[in-house]
Amino acid sequence: MNIVVTGGGGFLGSRVIQLLLERKDRGEAGVDFEQIISLDLAECPVADSRVRSVAGDVADPNLLASVITAETTGIFHLAAVLSGGSEEDFDLAMKINVGGTQAILDAARTSGVKPRIVFSSSLAVFGGLMPEVVPESLAAQPGSTYGAVKAIGELLVNEYSRKGFVDGRVCRLPTISVRPGKPNSAASSFASGLIREPLNGIPSDCPVPVDTRMWLSSPDIAVGNLVHALEVDAGLLGPWRTLNLPGISVTVDQMLESLANVGGREARELVTLNLDARVMDIVCSWPGDFDVERPLRLGFAKDVDFDDVVRQYRDEYVD
Image 1 (tube, rainbow, N blue to C red):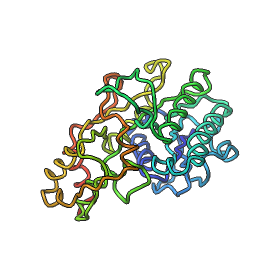
Image 2: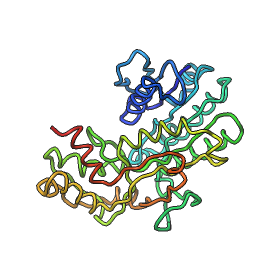
Image 3: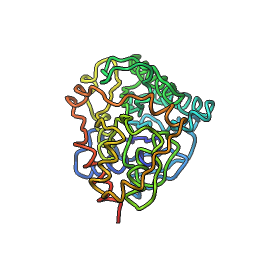
Image 4: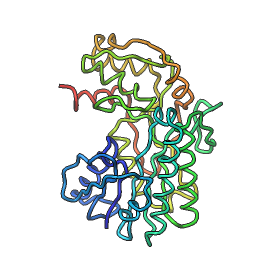
């Protein structure tokens, strides 16, 4: 038995793999496995004999057929062209984020089993006029290419689940903050850079107005929720398999106050407002608060407050 993780060489994917291994070692694994297969263009950084890295394109049906087999009990589909990259390269976004998702679903359908699939979606599927707090019933109306391709992926996972081909779970992730490492191509990358760089003594630009409201999750909570999504009983999810995962709602100004609370005023003073229309067009179209009562009842977790999120990053990554 195996679990396949697309994007397993990346930040979230490698952490999902590590948590799956830790849970198995503690005897807590909800979906059993003997091996985890990381499918990515990059090698999985998790050094464990139970992890096998496969390099390749998630839109390659022949490769997927060799990886997703009758032995596959679960799939985490985390690989994607991110928001900034999707806006810049429409064709690549369609090929990977839509074509790759359908190719994975088709491979699962023809595998001879009905694996559980966790599809990582995004709050970017929303746009236009929205209520202050987004309910579960609000229809997707994306204002970016990334949001559009993720919304298409959501519909595909729900349809393949309705037909009984797979047991899908769609997780709309909040913006993840604070990510370690370097900035990526996501338009929301600044949500980590505002905290990460100043805590390391490096200046950082804020590309959006400070009253912009963000829906955020720490990496640990986001990864734990993704793993929990694989383990939730399908009968509790109902026919519509899409979940707005819990986050915390804070303005950019409140994020900067948390930076000052944890890192001191000198860290806060390293952040300069430098508005970027490209980033604003994408990020400011996203909602900043959600009704997550049902996911919380299903056992999904949320952060306590953003001070705690900043403290978590500082304690783990800042010397």
